[in-house]
Length: 340
Image 1: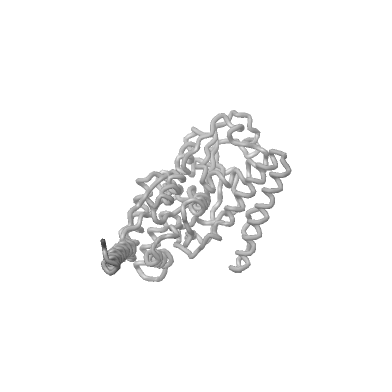
Image 2: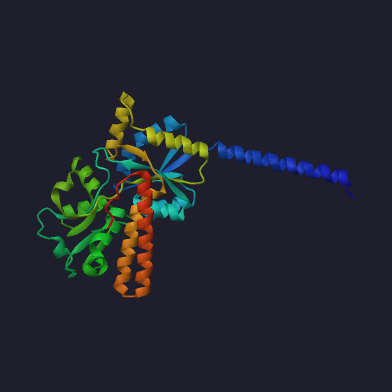
């Protein structure tokens, strides 16, 4: 039979082991030296890798962290990867960033800004340059046209055109067109330029970037609709990242490309290839505009049903989001963007 003193000694030994184990675990956690950065492939992964490679190299140099890229043209895979802790932070669209915050423990800490000085971009609908198709003709919905749309989680490729074009007109792409194909902006641009699609969604940034590159498919298309200005893209990290790692990353993004040094000028050249001027601090209120668009879409869908209870619930959600946006903008001293 073990004496009480022996039992206490054994217990103390186990406690020491447990504490040592915890200490080792804590040390391992705090010593995290690798982060995985997810990148939305709006073009081919090969192109996006070439654009991001020097930026990621600079990130490694400044933070002392090893940075592994994770490319995907599928918005959902970026969201799932963050939720599964396969990625630590990433460049998202607004709609996919919202889902990462909701479902994957994400948090907005920065956002991009455009080098042109225009703070925002626009969703567009494009047709071949020689096409006589107008927005009115597109909305005839006679099932004779082939239409391209973005990923379901794309802000400019799907959410904006649904919110501002199709739902207000009481139309649905799946019942309007002969075929509806979902693809990246780059793929949709190529399909319209080559007359494989009669029309598709896209965005102003993607068109401008393509116009600056050698193939210039943009010259072979024209815009027949554009949205109100949409907010720039968020940079999202996992909320549970080590605070030390977070601070290293924050300092990198908020200082990258800033200043008058030759190094900063080179960094701005890297960013310009992605139509970025740099990064500004942000938080989850950055997503209020896209939440409002989402609520507008849901209200439109509720009105289609004629169900007064659903309409009232959707209107209440929209009013709540609007109130949040007005409060956030008032606190920041900013004018309200056009999301109505």
